[in-house]
Length: 75
Image 1 (cartoon, rainbow, N blue to C red):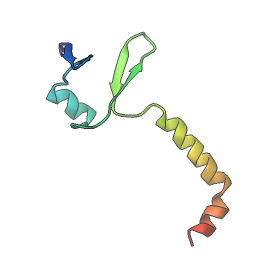
Image 2: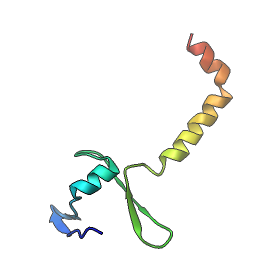
Image 3: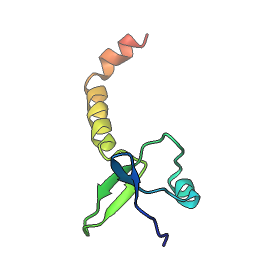
Image 4: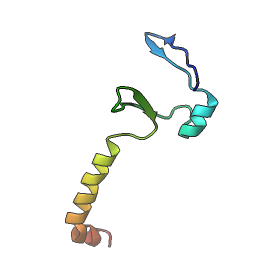
């Protein structure tokens, strides 16, 4: 477990991630991370957008329905 300190950053509050956490998350300065609620009431930090899966499912459905049209457009 790593102890983090909450600090004022402008008008907001923030924490600094230690290098071990940034390596484990595979993030660098400027990358986005997402704070998502967990079922047990806690929160998780993840570099993956939780809405991305829904967006990709919609895109795959679209590509499946219009497969022939997309194939013709690719020529």
